[in-house]
Length: 183
Image (tube, rainbow, N blue to C red; front, side):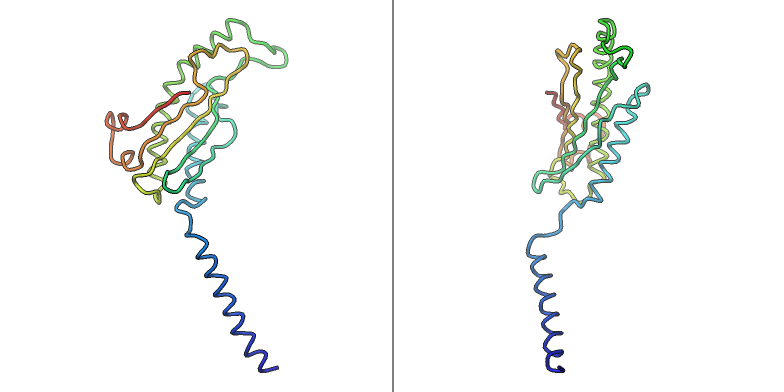
């Protein structure tokens, strides 16, 4: 029995070392851990929930972020720029309401872009472990209502820039490096 105990303990220690080595060989720890990404996601959620004063239901669902090694961080969200004036007693908006919805969306688009640029800088500062030459990207889906005139209105707004430039530049210089695309 004593011989077996003296054999089992080293075997268990050796097995533990092999398992640890296998996990270490499987890959390094992710550059951006979930805790760090969740902090940025929650910050963007809070920003998108309050970016307009008269519409507290702008964010649909929760922001999601991923880190892609060698590329950078990508955050996605879905935002409605205006609530449709419909309910159970008023299921279809009038032509005037549809025109008002379009006007409000057009007014709010530049506000959304400005908010996203600010959020991009904030995300770059919070994502400390991302290399400076990788990108920080925020893509926001802007859904459309079936009754609205969507001509000229994007369904997606994306802002992106290299992390280093987001942290180094200010003002107009910063605006010149942030790429804004609308699809």
